[in-house]
Length: 95
Image: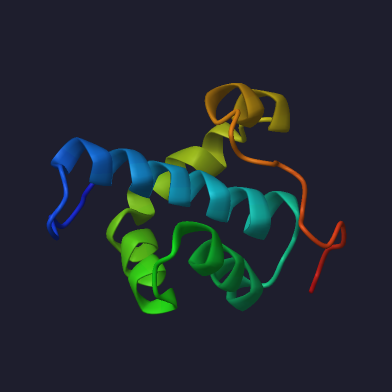
């Protein structure tokens, strides 16, 4: 995992970036959302610009590929991130 420190604790940035990657995996791969819609939802959830979200994903593409290869189930995601609702906000796909 990579992160650029911008005024926050390094470990907090890593944890946030990891959560963003799992959220992107969930929306884009599990819910089959187009990339732009996935980025829009993450941008709103994490209060970051879309540009910053894209940068985090790009900087950590190797870790994202590991996530994609492992294919974590929603049950695992729910246990790892219980504060996150692992259902698409619109309950639809291909938005």
